[in-house]
Image (cartoon, rainbow, N blue to C red; front, side):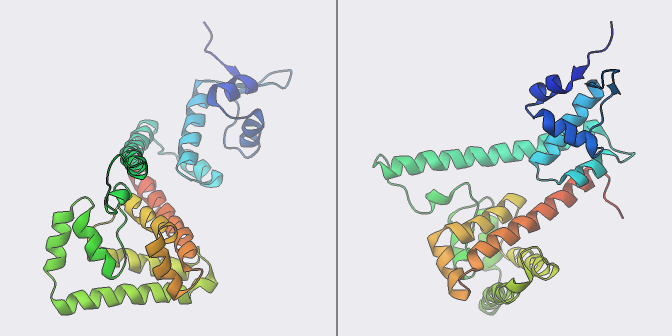
Length: 263
């Protein structure tokens, strides 16, 4: 019995994409059909289906099409390793979303008067610690590894603590001064690398924590007021710049996991 094949329409329906998308992937060499019939109909096989699945996984992670093609065309690309990596990232996102859902549910109950919810509880799941003097307070109240964070902070002298907080303020001011270069610029991304290292004075931030901080800086009233005082456009700028910074980190991490990061 011949192996199963799919037309453009059949594969599009199977994968939940449009026929136009598949034709575009063919044009750019990202997903070529296994064969083309005499009637010029494209036909896709099992290998095509698996490659399309990988394309959609990488797109879900935010990869651009040219980068997806470069990864999938690597001679040492291993499908099983890629799937294991996708599974790990999806599990992490699932756990994060479950925490957010619990937070949403609890907040709804709070708003309708069913429970009395503290402000700290409203931010469980975001793992978003405040900057400067608010960071220490937030770490003491919530977040994974809070005890270790408290122990780390308390290990500093008063002078060290003041220096750390001052360092954070200087980093944010530097970013504000560099806004003219744009959120994706090397200058801003270098400053965010310093910000990332600064956070390690309190805890080891995960990708989700970093991204959550960027969102919180622009979406929570207290944070937004703090950064608006530095520059009116800084909250939204930070959110965009940090998201780009984390995208780069996640891409590099995934490439290392797949063993394809260029030396």
